[in-house]
Amino acid sequence: MQGKVTKAIFPVAGLGTRFLPATKSIPKEILTLVDRPLIQYAIDEARAAGIEQFIFVTSRGKSALEDYFDAAPELEGALRRSGKTALLETLATTDVDSGAIAYVRQHRPLGLGHAVWCARRLVGDEPFAVVLTDDVIAGEPPCLQQMIEAHAETGGCMVAATEVPRETTSSYGVLDIAAEDGPLVRVRGMVEKPRPEVAPSTLAVIGRYILTPRVMAHLDRQRAGAGGEIQLTDAIAEEIRCGGAVHGFRFRGRRYDCGSKAGFLQATAAFGLAREDLRDEFSAFLGGVMGFARAAE
Ligand code: G1P
Image 1 (cartoon, rainbow, N blue to C red):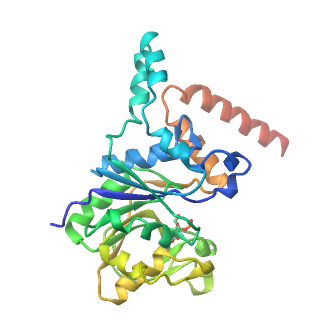
Image 2 (image 1 turned 180 degrees about the vertical axis):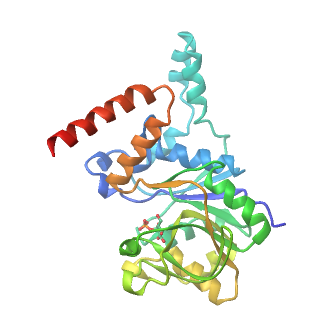
Image 3 (image 1 turned 180 degrees about the horizontal axis):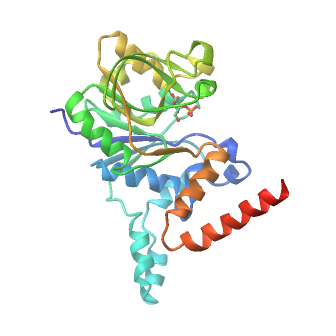
């Protein structure tokens, strides 16, 4: 059995330009699927996996994220006075113990690897998780929990993995597979955003990682990779070259790419349909829209 993973890094410094103009004044992590912002999905998943310390790597213009996890005394007082207990309970899902969230700033947008590295002093000498809020994963148990259970047996580094169409490999980190054992894939290399013709497989990294502190040491070198950015994938690949064990984990569940508009709309539809209070009205609406689209063809 391996040391317990209790810390998670959430790199939330990105500008979110794909969602302009909305992201001109709100962080993309506050964009909302039905009624919960993306960051809430990420925090809930981490909590379910036993994470106790949440490290946000932020940047300028992200103060709405700090406010989101702060107490809201006026709002709470107003809800209490009007007896709105259900809403108070909903609000309580944003409660985080004082001191359980730490914020560090990434001063310059030098890449995902650099963002993770900015949290090195808070992580210390322990294994840690990384959660990318753009990747929203519907899974039971939640993806990170599945990984932490598998990691208790394997140790080393682990990345969430899923098959993607070959023509899309240049959007992902892609695994070079050494061996497969059920959902576990032993990895002998990793490449960031390879062109389809040179991708070592079609098994792509999805934004959940469990990493050893040695990966931070590799990031210390600050070497730029794909797109001129310091890539997390390259540091994990370096760990493999140094003899460290790295596994891909084929999680059970469905991933939505909420970093893209199409993925965000798909997630909105899926999460809306999954909600008992909305399902009937929303599916009737979607049925109508589909019928209208078919009639127009
Ligand atoms: C990042 C990682 C990439 C991974 C992807 C998953 O890329 O660098 O390896 O496959 O997340 O969503 P980004 O989407 O930030 O370009």
